[in-house]
Amino acid sequence: MTSALVITSPGSGAPPLSDELQAAGIHVLGACECDKLVQQALRCAPDVVVCWEPSPAEAGLFDALELLSRTQPMPVLVFTADAGAEGAQRALELGVAGWVVHGYAPTRLRPLLQLTRARFEHEQRLRAERDDAHQRLEERKLVDRAKGILMRSHGLSEDEAFRRLRGAAMQGKLRVGRLSQQLIDAARDAEALNRSGQLRMLSQRLVALQALRLAPAPDVDAPALQATARRQAQRNLDHLSRTLSAATLGDLLQPLQSAWAALEQALDGASRLEALAGLDQCAEALLVAAERLTRALEGGSALQTLSAVNLSGRQRMLGQRLLKQVLMGALLATPEGAQALSLAAATARDFDQALQRLQQLPLSSPAIRIALDAAAREWQRMQQGVREAGHETGRRQLALSAEALLACFEDLTGDYERSAQMLFD
Image 1 (cartoon, rainbow, N blue to C red):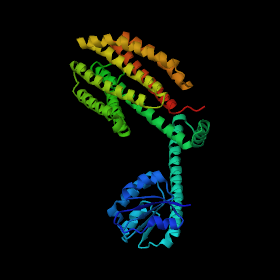
Image 2 (image 1 turned 45 degrees about the vertical axis):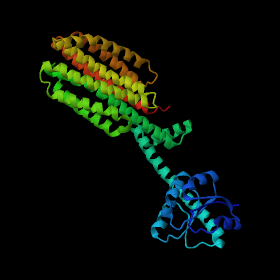
Image 3 (image 1 turned 90 degrees about the vertical axis):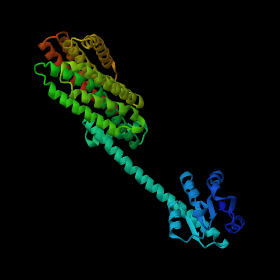
Image 4 (image 1 turned 30 degrees about the vertical axis):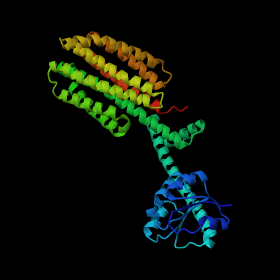
């Protein structure tokens, strides 16, 4: 037996709907006013809601129907005196399957209820088909993006990228679209972490290059390298500001932007050796802000492998930090110079310990192992330059080794970033 919930308003001149529905063989579950429609519909779960409302807008029926459509869509038949096109349009938008103007009659109840339910079910099928088509389209977009990531990161053809996606999805008992979304999220998180880590490194690099501009080393074009580093820092900051959620990470992005603006201003005014210590203070503020963002990105991601990206990326910073500290210690006969030199030993120890950790990580590949061996050799050459930094030839070796070491860890961090996106057997 079809069940119904009756909705009427006091003084609306409604006929005895409940009695006439029961006489027509409809099981009436209850009756209420518009403001109780959703509550009673959820409690009773009728097959159809039957409303008598001459003025739906004034009675608040449309508001109740909108809430019902969002909460639990169900067939609704409305008897009304509202002959306006606006009311009919609003009812249609809210999914009202039966809208009868000046057409109530007890003998019409059963056929109208049957038509209302049939129309509602038809519209639900159409909506489900539409939603399914939309989901397939969105899934196809995700798959295409995921294929592009695999093609760029792993050098795969389009067919091979899709084959691996499909195989991994089957192995993980996931839809290909769901796995694709995970891969896209992983790529986004890894890139954001890498860029934030680069800002951390660039804070130290810009000061080191300024020191080399003030005390040049042969074969090192410090002005050109510094200009490139400044552009790289701005690009990374722009990318992070554009892609990271302001609601989630805005409190970390804003200090980063402020610290970068202060460092840029200090760079423009650091034409004398005496300004190097002040420039370094601005760089330290940027380092702190970038470190906070990097840790938040690592901690906020579901990817366990991001720790390797962060660890490798931090080696870039430590190499440039050591270069900066040694140069400041060699060039500044001030307390700041002495302090920088005293901190260099601790920076070198941090670098050594992190290098050992990277060599022990299970996340590896032939390319990563080769790059780690090259980085270890370059690290030995840089340490030799550290010992001779008081001389021009020593500064040359130190600067060139630092550049080579930075290149090694840029490549390594990129390898870890690609590995962090997804590992396929």
